[in-house]
Length: 260
Image (cartoon, rainbow, N blue to C red):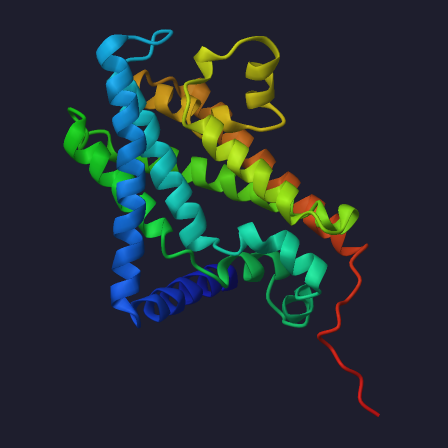
């Protein structure tokens, strides 16, 4: 219960802080929505020449984009500090979170909000509601699948950021891995074969962020949904375990000064 109060309190605080500069807030949202729209435009141009892509049609791509956008938006809005984890570790800024009574990982993740993430969230939601037929009827399932995709994205960011406990300066590596997850999740996993497809179901679980949720929305299967929930739980548990394992190696930074 305390964790939920902590999360809701930070979301409220971060949102109000963002609204203090409303012009910049809405500009970031608008800019991210335009960026997403341009990416979708290129897919539309391709499907004008090739109506299907390994069984995927334009409507399926729209479903995929909607889920990834809402899921990613949810991740960076609620858990905005996940992308900074490696930097916080190497700079010694974890000291602040370790000194407080709240769970250090949860506190760290929710203490920052990415304002541009609202652009991803609203873009994906509006795209889904106003482009796809019968969207309102499947809205609860859409939101559930997007939530699971966002939680997997967050867990992956924690895993890659935690590499800094062992590798030291690894911010660039963590950023590249996060971008790989996001970029590959925007492509149907069926267009890949062999080792690449296996990679997208394991080391870089992009299939569970984009293709699997999208397939579930267009062709629902209760066992695939149960599998996706299980993968989300396993990813979250693994991320938490790796982070806490890394804390044993953590050396405090120079933010705490001893005075005589």
